[in-house]
Every structure is written in C-alpha cells, then in structure tokens.
Image 1 (tube, rainbow, N blue to C red):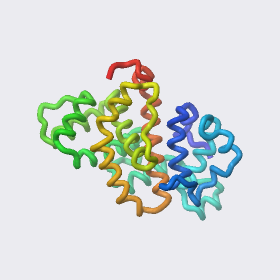
Image 2 (cartoon, rainbow, N blue to C red):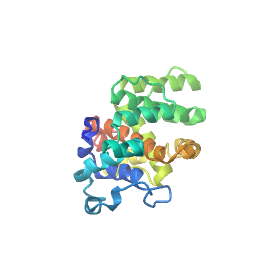
Image 3 (tube, rainbow, N blue to C red):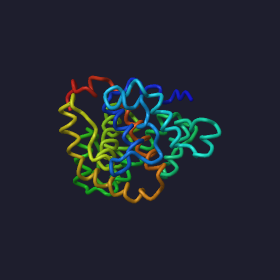
Image 4 (cartoon, helix red, strand yellow):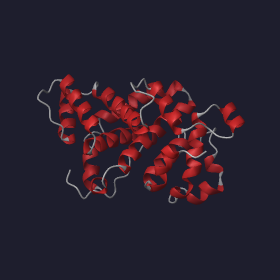
Length: 248
C-alpha cells in the first residue's frame, strides 16, 4: 500500500533509518521481535544497515502491519496508513490534537506533548538551561512562563522546532536502544544535545517504563512515530543547520 505521508523516508539518512528499523524489529533485549518478519527477508539481509533507503517500501509495510489488527491485516493483505497509526499513538499518549490537521501538525503536537510533559518534571535551573540553549527568551522565569515560551517557539517553527524534535527523538533512542541519534557530521549539535541527556533523558525513560505494559504493538508504533516525526522535521530544516555549518 502506497503511503504518501512516508514517501520522504527514501531520502532519509541511513543512521536515522537504522533507528527506525531497530524500533520495528528489535525488542528491549536487542533480539528480533517474535511478531516481526522483516529481518528474515533477503532484502533486509542485503540492505541492513548501510543501504536501508533501498528497502523503505518494506520498512513502511512492516510498520503499517504493526499499526493494524493482525486478523484484518490478513484479510486486506496489508496494514493501516501512517496517518491512522499517528492518530492512534496520539490518543494513547493523551495528546491534544485535531485529527483533521495535517500529519506535520499532528506530529508537532506529539513532540510538544512529550517535551512539555518532561518539562513539568524538570527543575527551574534545568528549564533555564533549556531555554538558553534553544535561544528562547521570556520575560519571566516562573515554570509556567518558561513552558509557555517553549510552546510559542514550537508554533513559530524554524530552528527551535528542529532542536525540540532532536531532544525528544534522541532521548527516546537512548532510553530504548541504549544509544542516541547520530550527529557525526555536526560536532556542535553533539555537544549541545549532551546538555539535555540527563534531565530529559531520565524523564523519558521513566515515562516509557510506565508505558511498557501498554502492549507489544505500542512498543513499536510509539517510538517509530516519534522517530518519523523527528525525521520529517529534519527533512524540512535547511542543511546548513542539520549538517553543522551554522553556529549553535
């Protein structure tokens, strides 16, 4: 089934695709999931991990099947569209969103929800550091004012939105895969993300532990959707920023 909302994945970096594929195929112990079928294919054995762009169709199909009911997947011969998976994840995560909005807007609501939820658990000092690193200004440093300032920056978009997507996706990758995202070409961003590995990373890990009993399908679809949301923001951000030729 063609899913135009995921067509951009064929242009994504190998390292970002590898994180997505690992979410889909590996359980928390690092072993192949009992319900996945991707790692058994000749295509996977040929393309993983350095040529994943050549098998994005199969990656998307596997994700769609995790998002659908197994019985109905068999009847229709495929899973469900990404948009359906995204909305289901947002409902599970109790995100405030309009299901009629674009995929990009719904993904932004998801990333914002996760970040703001972790900000509630952060100290005032950590929040000040967060605003400083995001280059977000506020007239008051009360927790409510700082959170409102971040919300405003997300709505505006641009560089702050990219950084926020990086923070959330990197924290989830650290919590679930034991490694963060790869920023080998961007030493400045690598240093910057380390500022938040502690407070936000711990908050995400705690939240995920509570969610781990939600069921095997959500253990795939939730992190996969977060990774895709980050990848879309990255694809829409100027390369001067994502590749490190801009000052941080």
